Length: 136
Image (tube, rainbow, N blue to C red; front, top):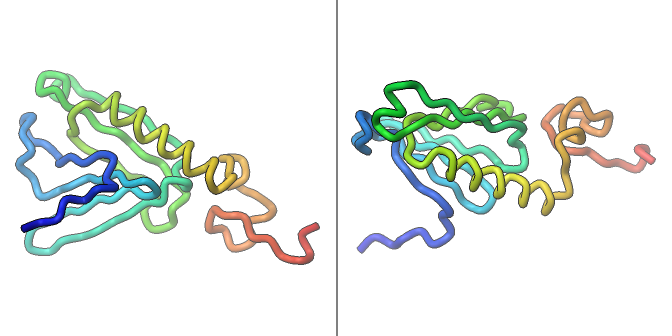
């Protein structure tokens, strides 16, 4: 019997004509956003929530007709700076949940967006602050 994931805050599939009939699965956990794509060859991507810089919502006329929309996630992640959660249900609620989780992780890590972008303390350019003995 499959064990249910307890720490998943949200889960959905990419939808076609409003139906979850695709092999793209989106999951939101406490600290990461996961995307799993494919059937024969499966690709797994994850984005750390504290690296997310911007969220936007987009709904075309067809998406409105079928009750879905897309959330565009912009992050400082080097491997996946632009991520689109395509054709998901309840887009406004999911965007607000994602925003809340992102802010929680940034507060937990004590990070702000202005600390991640072009910070003089980010020597290696990975979006986090690098402290050494010569910084202060």
